[in-house]
Image (cartoon, rainbow over the protein chains, first blue to last red):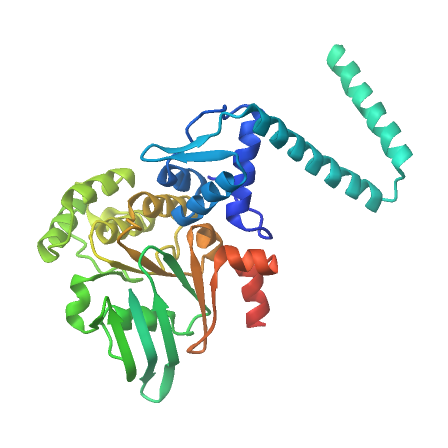
Length: 127
Length: 229
C-alpha cells in the first residue's frame, strides 16, 4: 500500500516535500530525472494533475527543471542543495523547539537535554 | 465536456435532483459524493442517457444526451450484470463486439495488470475480481467520458488499491474526463481533482481538492463532516 497523505495540507505540497527530502537524503541525486508524471502518479497514488502541480512547484522553488521532450530533472546546482538542506533543517528545528516551548521548557533546558540525549545516543553507538 | 443546465429529475412525486447546473471539463477526475439517496447515481444515469431529466438539458461534448450517447460515454454500473457462464475473455470479446471504441490491446493490458485469467468463468470470480473485470471493460473503451458508479463498493482495501492504480495507469487524461461516485472517499481523495457534494438532490459544494485543503486546512472527509451535520 502506498503511504498516505496528511489531511491538513495540499497534496501537491506534501508530494513536493517528499521529493525535497529524497534529494537531501541522497536518494535522488543532482541531475537525476524525476519519474514521469504518470509513473509518479501511480507510485504515490495521486492524480496526474497533482503531480504536474508538484513539478511546477519544484521548478518555481528552483529545485527542478523541465527539459523539453525529456522530462523533469533535479537541478545540478550545489548551492540549491545546500539551501534545501538548510531549509529542511531549520523547519525541523523550529517544529522541535515549538513543541518543547509548548511543554513549558526553557531554552537552557532544551539545550542541556538535547546535548545529554545526543551524548547518550553516541555512547550507545560506541558500545 | 459535460454540461448540466437546471436539471431536475423526479421519480413519481419524489424529487431526486432539484435544480442542478454543473460543468465538467476534459482532463479532470471528479468525485461525486453524498449520502445514500442524495442523487449521485441518478446524476450518472442521466449523463449516460439511461434516464431522462424531468426538466433541464444535459450535453456531452455539445451533443444533447439520449440513449445514443453510449458512443461517447462509458458507464460502469454499481450492479453486477454479466452472464455467469461467460469467461473473462468472452466478456471482453462481447464488449469489443458492442463498442467500436473498445481497444482490445488495452483491454488485454489492463486484464493482465489486474491479474485476471482470461479463461476464468465469471461465476467463479470473487467479488473483488468481478470489480476488477468491470474496470477492465470500462477503461478499455476510448471514449471522452468515463462514468464510474461506486467502483469500490464492498471491495476490500487491496482490491480498491489495485483498481485505483489501474485507473491511474490507464486513464488518458489528455482526452478523457472521469466522474466517480463513491462512499470510499479516503481511497480516492488523492486521485481526484475536484469533488461535487450532493445533498437531497442539490449541489452543496464544488471544490478543487487541493484548494480546499489550502484554504481550509481540511480534507474532503473533514469538510463533509462539517457540511452534513
